[in-house]
Length: 443
Image (cartoon, rainbow, N blue to C red; front, side, top):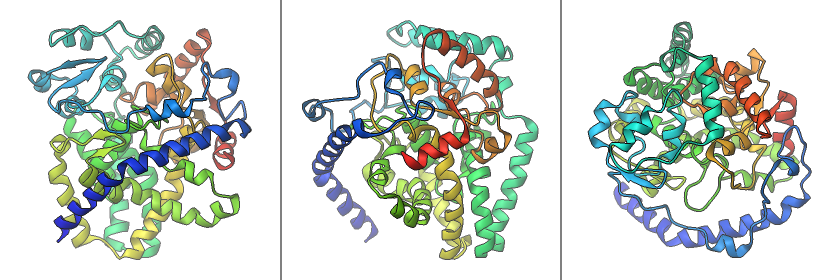
């Protein structure tokens, strides 16, 4: 019966896809019409003079946008418009098998460029398997050169520090004890706080291959960090493959799933936002976990237009394992709601503030690197408190440019990025916590 229900739901999604895309197009047109009436702060939002291109698109242009996920050969890698068969290189890849296989069957240009800042060996290797890639973006290369000079130890020197690893592991054990063993509403409220600050950091840094040079350590860290919320591949597809590649972009083909529902929240009056905050906090955690698994991965087969490769990351093993753990050892439903509430209360504002205050319109930028700088914000970048509360992500600009570099290195990278941006007249947002969270609430 469960299989029949899944098949029926898949049919409903397929039959209604055109209506959903038409609704999305209408929503975009309405938003673009309203965008001129919005007040913008030069500190917290994109000022009009800092945007090189107009935001306005005609309805005719919107109607011509692709409305289906792009079709790629599931056994090829697509980089800078060229296709490559890299299967022979999978076992030789210095970053591990999974990191390379992540790009299989999709346009992985952004992953190719952002995870290889240390030299140009990746470009030379690619030439051995097909067409030579185009010359790199000079602006991005200037920042990379500064990073290489500031961090001469290279990739290995930027991985998570040992003391941090031990501290996160100990805190994770306490979080598991509170949630699965004590299992009371109060203990799960506390566990939820740790899910947001400790679990998120483990799953985030593991998913970006920052924890260790060993693939297994990163994969296990991602799995354990996300264990209370859902199978960690839900997080991997949402964050690494969708959000980091298409930051703040809401095109109908491949898009950033992090901003899918922001337009709806923007339509609500302030008093109603206050009333539904508890539901938003709980709903957001369900959205990135169990909803992402059932609706997007198992039924739709794509996350933000990025097709799911069921061979990747041990997904077919992880999903039943996650269900078994929670079925046999999970606490009561009330405990889940308590944990998800406090987790969402911290995770939602701290994870969204660095991007959402710049949303709503997809922009066309001169390069991918410039898009990441334009669509991200550094906030409270010198505060240790907010660094911890925001699970190390107060320097989002630098993280999006160099996702494989450990968080503790971003203070150095931030100064380099700001210098290159100033030299090239590129706006780099670095605001206070009050400005950032104020803009998030009043956007």
